[in-house]
Image (cartoon, rainbow, N blue to C red; front, side, top):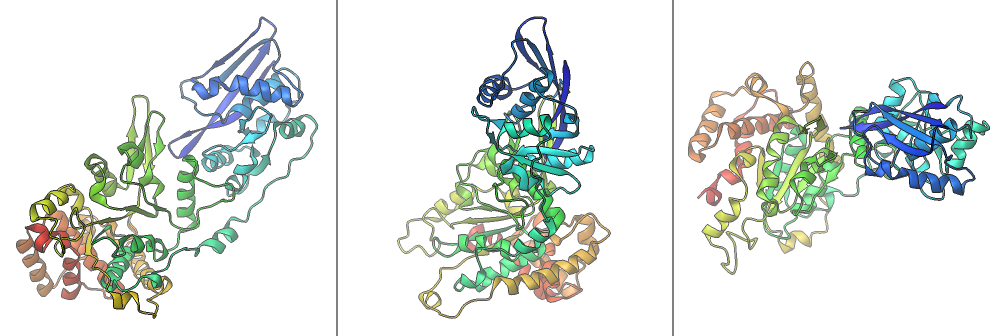
Length: 511
């Protein structure tokens, strides 16, 4: 008897329905699995055999042929265990299979018949709805994630026997229903850190506000213990809240990477990713033999924090140059190409020298040459892609002992939201949303300067020997400073502030 059952495969951040054809006949004995399965799927026969035996069923001693179509698409992972097991039972007449074609069935089996969670549930559920399936049957741990998708029945099971009884005896499985919008609104302002906890550093806070308002990349330069990491961790709290569309995009990426917890249904706050400096190129940008999203894609719609940036391998940093411009990553293989979104705000930090204290090194342990060699770990083209360079000074004792709290993140966020609303209105008919995304055409149209501002930026270009890309960055940051002020035009004081945010192009940094 031939039975068709449906699963799903992940390709990038999208899913593709897989038809699992199971044929059982009496013309011999054997177990044949075809359709480009990987080793995890090939080993499924052992898991399925033990699981069925432990719940009172068995793999029949006949010729079993299983085809996973389309046959030219590689399938991977143990998520097809449940699909194959139910297909074998239906094809061997051990259970009824009248309604099996109405459902996507996915899950990894343990030897006792219980189910383990799988990756990529959200894109699988979205694809199932688009293709008109009635419902989806998944491990219980994945149900909240799938329940985000409306107009799709989501059933969570803990053991294969529940699925068998559902089809064979009509025994109901409890359907999981989630009010996505309500849950999203309840958790949209949950932030563990607040800017009011930061002592001093008013200049750095202002730079962070400008960066958040325009979506600009920023690098913090300062000695150890000056609060660089503390400032970076608080950036998500002043960024505009995720829209429901952005939340779905972000959740989809984390789902594919297997980063969603059992109690998490939808990403409600912007992600903050902080990889260690020993990270590899592939782990940062994504890829591998079976491509997976990297850290820059996991930071999509959020913040990527690179602490002690010069300690990262130069090759790792250089592979970020293209994603910083294009806001997506393309992974190419011989048989296929995968695109991962990577629209993130880069926040980096670094010490000014190997000792961490140049030029105010009390022990004179770093020379100018050592400082320059340390700085040369960061290429000019990469630094050009960072709009704001800000020096973070050592916090004095009087500031640390100050009892008065600083400005709250919610107050800063309010100003950021006003600036973003101005930008949204400005770019409403364009394919961009905020100032950092402006191209040459938008810069020319929206960043016109008066004579005083023009002369100021010309002097800065000539004196500091800035690149054309740095010129564009200054105009973008000045546009954001003007938006925060509610000004339609860019003034000389906005240009002056933007030039001050090019620390690495000035003074002893450029000797």
